Amino acid sequence: MPFTQHHLSFALGSEIKGLDLSQTIDQPTIQALRKALAERGFLLFRNQDITPEQHIAFTKQFGELQPHSLDHYLHPEYPEIFVVTNRLQNGKPSETRNTGREWHMDLTYTKTPCMGSLLHCKEIPSAGGDTLFASLYKAYDELSDGMKEVLGKLNAIHDFANVSDLKNRTPESVKHLVEKNPPVTHPLVKEHPETRRKVLFFSDAVTSQIEGFSEEESQPILDFLAKHTTRVEFTYRHQWQINDLIFWDNRCVIHMAPPDYDRNDPTEKRHMFRTTLKQSLA
Ligand code: SIN
Image (tube, rainbow, N blue to C red):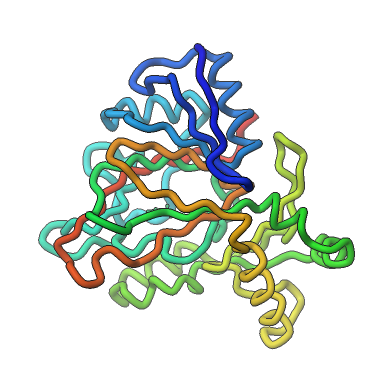
């Protein structure tokens, strides 16, 4: 199926035009999309008025879905969908209203972080509610050779308890989530399995310490990595439109959603559906 691809920023992101995601996409096109995704880090599809079933079916064309390890707000009829929303849930504030407020890759606080996520925009506030993305390829490429060598030998601890959003949750919810997600380690430098390019695998939200280093020794390195991975020239900021769908590659991109739109007006609503793909893909 023919489609066109336009770069969205210098560092990352492509808009894909010409595909209707409510339809089954043929395999050669899926493979071409996979290639574009791995190279550009995320793909934007606009005007996709799709149902949850169609969203799930499109995701499955790329592989197996990953059940979300945070079970605090899955869609009641479609548990494959993680709902990121500030709409009230059963009369109470939604547990996902502050999801993704810091730079992160999805699920790196688990042993097998996901391959990618597909976020579909259902409702947007009158202003704000954007999502920012940054390229971990560029973050690696722009390190000095000396720093590449040092970081290439290190592992980092990823700890869900580090996420600042936990302070907004109930003590029971925090206990449940932290017990379910004990700290894990990942190399600081990884190779993308499809492009074979190196990435700096760092998440400001959950990377809590360098393995084998004290907290005091780790902190200056983490501070440098937080600043470096989000240099403005490595980023793209997306202003959502209803029925945008963004598919990001969690293996080479970090993202974050700034907490801006409902600060002064809690009636401003942002409502998104997310599917998640398992890592173990060809
Ligand atoms: C996420 O981090 O998965 C959600 C990002 C967003 O809501 O923009």
